Amino acid sequence: MSKVDNSRRLFIGAGAAATAGLVIAPGVTLLDLAHARPAGEAASSTKRWGLLIDSSKCATGCTDCVTACGKENGFGSTGHPETDAQWIRKVELKEIKSGNSHSLPMMCQHCAEPPCVDVCPTGASFKRADGIVLVDRHICIGCRYCMMACPYKARSFVHEEHEDQNPEVPRGKGCVEGCTLCVHRIDRDQQPACVESCKEGAMLFGDLNDPNSEISKRIATYATTQVRADLGLNTGVRYQGI
Amino acid sequence: MNFEAFRKIENSVFYALLGVFGLIAAAGMGAAYYMESHGHVVTGMTNQIVWGMPHVFAIFLIVAASGVLNLASLGSVFGIKVYKVRGMLSGLLAIAMLAGGLTVLMLDLGRSDRLIVAMTHLNLTSVFALNVFLYTGFFSIVAVYIWTMMDRKMHDYSKYVGFAAFIWRLALTTGTGAIFAFLVARQAYGTALLPPMFIIMSFSFGLAVFLLVQTAMFRWNNRKLDPTIQRRLKNLLAVFVAAVLYFTLVYHMTNLYFAKQTAFEHFILLNGGIYTTLFWVGQILLGSLLPLAILFHPEMGRKCNWVIVASLLVIFGGFAQLYVLLIGGQAYPLSIFPGYEASSSFFDGRINPYNPSLPEFLLGFGGIAIAALITTVAVRVLPFLPDDSVLHGETVGE
Image (cartoon, rainbow over all chains, first blue to last red; front, top):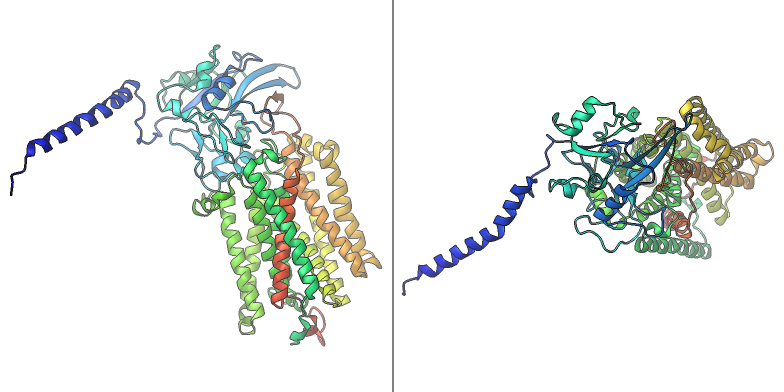
């Protein structure tokens, strides 16, 4: 029986390890540089992501946040406004008595006690540990009960097939969807697209659980409002100026 | 017991019915396929009116399904013989209508293909998920109930199974009413009045459907309904119709008392266009007052044909009531910013229009046709028709 030549095996093994290292290392380095949550690590309840919107800085007629949301998440007008998805919309408000007017963006309020999650029969509508309310498109059956339950009209139903989707934000016909707070960006340590697009600085994104975050300090200092606070849903999106 | 009295529908009528109902059911399935392949964009439903005509049909069928079982319950649970002999037909109609209603509900889903997901992923805080248990349990209990009524060896158990079925049907309709009662967002819903109101609606719609089917079946079999029994049933229907009216009155009176609800009430009662018309003309006048007048009229109330007219009116009124509650409740804008006038590209602050499309109607009628098909076939193969000859020599109702 001839002697086995181990050197070749050792060479192949070392080569494979080097290749794996070359493939994985840049990713690990990037994750480290970006301080983002590594894939596979669960979102943490130590954080609660939220938004503070200052309606006094939000200009009537400006729809930059809406445009940015559509671009980021891959939707736009199909020519059917009644069935088009609107994850964020600009609402113009006029106080009935005084005529005092406001303009503000409205989207999923990422409630701590979300009615959409309570009513969803399959659990597709869920709240992530860090407070972001999402729809699991794999188990949404398209019953639209969450749309009936949402007090903010924040959810849309995908009424038709859509091409040219953003691969990071897949959208399926027959499922319900809504603002994800740009969860794919947050997981990369970036801000939601709407916040980034607001030139007036009317939108502030941050961790409501961190007392030292800018958003927590502002909420601690100024009077802010939760929309339909009477419902006791403890919204993650707060407003200033209304 | 004279089993000969259980007659079967004549051959020609049977096949004609099979053909007609089959065609309607097929049209409904075609409509569902069309909606499924094109998406809900081909329907009248939108992001504002998220539940439409299919839901009106489905909820009518589901509510009436539990109500129609009432006849059997009156027989088994409360021991009234006139109703006891109607138990099997009542159980059959309950199963058939629930099957029809659920078919419509399932086929309207955005992803009907994920039905298995609905069965395997259950969020128990959702009344929809609880309803999955209530619906499947209802099928099973009623099937066993029919067995205990049909098989003489099982008669002894009939009372107990009947009692279970009675409790279950109350739970089921509570669950259906709770779908809306648990909705905090919209002004039409979010009230604990809705589940009991749905229960009394189920009594009324269910009995109207039963009277209709019973008369049709009797006529095709050349049988006559005993006038005493007819009188009892029509009086019962009148009581149920009046009870629904009472609940409707309390619902609107309570809303009118809350300042935050008055604008919504004005919309439904005064200036809501189709919803106001359907409420006053559909539900109140044609669906309640007119049938009450017919049923209590000394002459008309005794005539079988007029009782049928009254039953048809009650069913029409039921559809009108559900349309106003479901669609009217969504057409009125959400009060997101109380005290403010709101407007947006997403139709905030606007009355939402809804034009039901043909596929939606076809799917709804398809559900009714499925219920009718099940009933027609079952009555043909098994002795479901009431046999009043067993009551001869006894005082009706004792």
